[in-house]
Length: 231
Image (cartoon, rainbow, N blue to C red; front, side):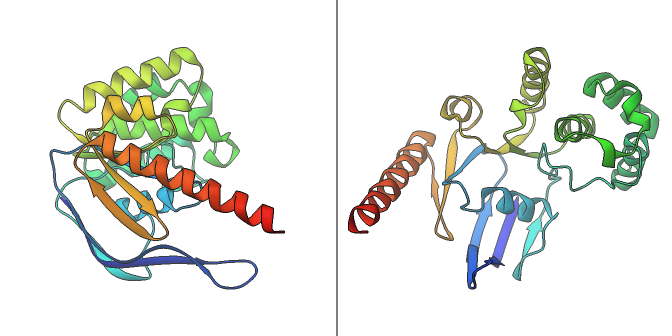
């Protein structure tokens, strides 16, 4: 279970004011559901995943977890840029109490980083960091996986390998997934969360969540067109 207790998070805007991600959020996500997280670009989906993972702190409130939750797949903020990929893997293994050698062997085989595994993460491309993050997450095994468009990483063969491994992990785990591909969400998710203007709606049926999201997009486009017509 992941529970948000009166959680608020916002960021300052360059021209003044603040952009609200969530405000006074009270929400409980039980085990046994795989959720799509939908919202317009800039609505705060990635920030919400980081709050769920614990890699970002709320301004107010707290997030409680009674299950193991991955860091967002594809998010490299959990790694230290001054350490090598291998050193980061060993560090993560110690934190989670798993065998260092076994995790190293898994990530080495899966992520296909070759000699770069012994280079500083700071010199990695964004794609290489995502491979490392995905490999470590798959090697550890979590109750809940947080996914932020990770299936777009790498070439076609690597994406296919990621999807195959991910499907195997989800046989015993849940997922909270952000993706712009509705077909992907329909494959992996049965329910949905829609984030709009700092508020979240829960939908038991993924199709209802997608319909609300598409309605929000249409309304936003209509408002933008009206503002243009008035100027």
